[in-house]
Image (cartoon, rainbow, N blue to C red; front, side):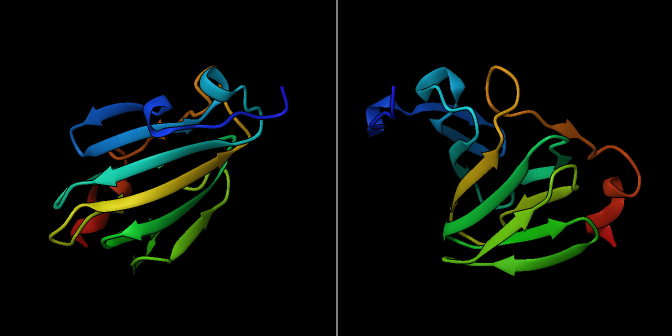
Length: 134
């Protein structure tokens, strides 16, 4: 197979307590080996807490809304058209501090595991557990 078209009805969606994931491309759906792509929503007041991807680089592009983006101990606010590149094994987090849903396009590579995406949650560990309070 040289590729695959992905229509809206092909995107597997998951609802989470902080927002939602739409799996655009991953090994299980498209046969991808090097790139996992997601459509992510973050609801106001919620976020994807501190975590890292030991074997994957990541790019997050803000399509709508506004997020407080952390890259290790540094943070900035990103709006539509802005992005962050995250090197593998780098702790990061994204929080919606606005009043509307934030919509993100996320790409990770290479694919990891059967689902194409693996992470290590570090939100309960120091210093990440108190990072936003400081």
